[in-house]
Length: 596
Image (cartoon, rainbow, N blue to C red; front, top):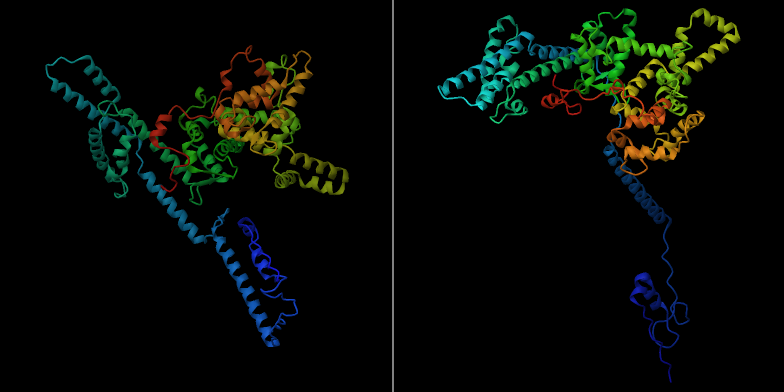
């Protein structure tokens, strides 16, 4: 009897899903018993067919076709990568070289535009006429309301409202339009003295002051009227800001809304001659004063240290307002005592630098720089004063030393200051040459007056955002953007060593000080203080003094027994006219630089 054929092998779905070729492989095997397909290697199987032979020409043609396909695929991939290149943003846009004639045309057009804008500003006598028009309209309305009541008894509320209207000149929008018509007629009556009627038309000069959008910016009373005095302050402030924009724009060589540091220095030099508070400024100190004043503008409005600042930021900030106070103020005005731009403050800043520079090298070494925070009032009580050595090193690394370029400038400045006779003598005497080379290296590692001004501005206004950015860059040792336990303990260790050096001090656990710092800041991420956390906490000045200054740490530890000193609370904050700034719509980033 013939043997039965073995059953066909069946695979599960899981096996076929993993190896779909298994079923076809099982089919290819011939069974060992009769029937079915024959194995390829068996004697009964037909011999395999030989592959067709190809001529050398055909083989060469196939190779050429395959090579052409590979080259076409490579070319297509290169085209695809080239098409993606324009989507990558450019990080640097160099200024195009402009022909001299085009530059002269642009400067002339910019100058003429500024002159036209300046001609449209109201003068002092015209502002007085505007106030008389506002007061006249309010007086007529109050008189008409008094006649309309006739013999009726006036209540206390009516009497109080009338007094407020008379004192503050409250006006409605309809009455403001009456003021506009009366004021425009006065302006047009003086038009014969002007040369360009199209530019000097009264209606076009004051249209933006009397529009509905301007009226809606003010706080309205229950009857829909606004304060006329506040309206006049708005007009005067707007004219002052516009005049400042024109004055700054005169020094904008590129007409791009930005001022380089050299252009800002020219603006300061031009303004100094017209300021009444700087009448006693000597020619010998004028250069230093202009440098001191320019550094205030650049430190506040150039946080990324690009060497330029936006004109709209200058107008919106308080630095320009403080600088403009010197135009009408007297030199001995007590209000200028805390003004950075006053002559007394500038002389005091320069005297401090000269006093710290013991070797008269024109720069401050680390040891000289650390004495900047010495306070003679606490000489007997505080054992160690001055900045910590770690913080002084970090200030030099982050803000003072400029790398090879800074060292090169220092060498060039030293070479210029050295006389030719000394240079010839140094070439002959090797000892003098070695001493001069040592002096050059020392000068390149010192803090110049430029960097000293930056630190003075930051230390005197520790809560200002620019100052916090300045100090955070020095405190962030690893440049990770946060201050962790490692950075806090790095700076506290120097303070702790000085604390232990005084035998009269009690045993202080610096871990408690570290925890107290984190409790004061309250960072969003526990144990990681960011720059945003410092700006938000409100006590960043205390944290900086604890970490960086021996005297500041001693003051903080004895804060309960020391009297409060209001003179050390000077900050660069918004002035008292913040509400008026909101009315003006003055914002540094949103200002339009293309108005002129």
